[in-house]
Image (cartoon, rainbow, N blue to C red; front, side, top):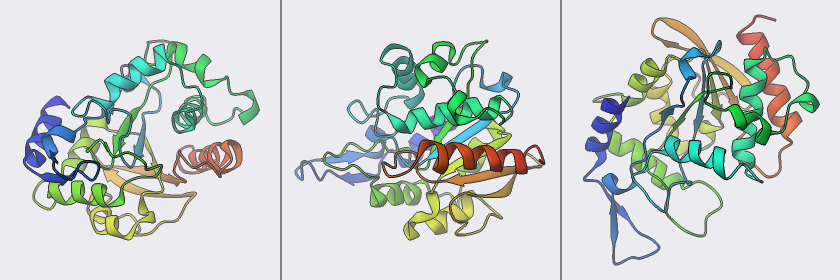
Length: 250
C-alpha cells in the first residue's frame, strides 16, 4: 500500500490548489495529500469491509499525514464523542462482522467497541476517500465538491487507475459507499473507478463490481455525516438488510 500511495502522491504533487482562506498563497497536491487504506488486523476479519467516503477533514491542520494513523490514535485516546460519521462506521462494521443479525438497540456503544479496535480480538476495516486531498478550508460543514473533482482530475486515472489498484490490494469482501454519486461533477470519474456499476445507483441500493476476479457487493448509503438521518433507520437497518441479501443470500 505504501508504494501505491507514494506513486499517487507523486502524480498529484505539483498540482496547484487555490487557497481560498488566504488568496496570496497556494497549496500543492503534495502538501494536501493524505493516504488511507487498512487498519491493523483488517486482513484477518471474516468479512473484509471497505468504507469509501468523500474527503478527509480530520488531518486538515497537519496535511500530508496518514488519515489512518490519526484515526487509530483518535479512536483510542480521544474517543468518538459526538462524531457521528465515525460512530456510524463503527456500528455498521460491528453489525456486519457479527453476521448482520444484531438489532440496533443491542449494539454496544461505539466507545466500548473501539476499546479493542484494530487488535486481534476486536473489529477492523479499511477506509478509502474519493479524494486524497485533506480539505483544509474553514467555514464549510459539507464536502468541497470542486476540490474533490480536482483531485480526481489530477489523478489522471485514465492513464493509471490508482483506485482499482487500491481495490486490488485491499481485496474487500464488501464495499460501503457514502452517496458518492450525488454530484454530477464526479460521475465521469466514478464510471472509471466502479467499472460496470450503474452511473447513478441511488441510496440504499446494492450493485456489484469485479475485484481480483470476484463480484463484490457495493452498498450505497447516505453520507455518514448527515445530521438529518436516523442512525437506525437510514443507516444501520438498511446496511444490515442489504448485507444479508447481497453477501449472505438471505
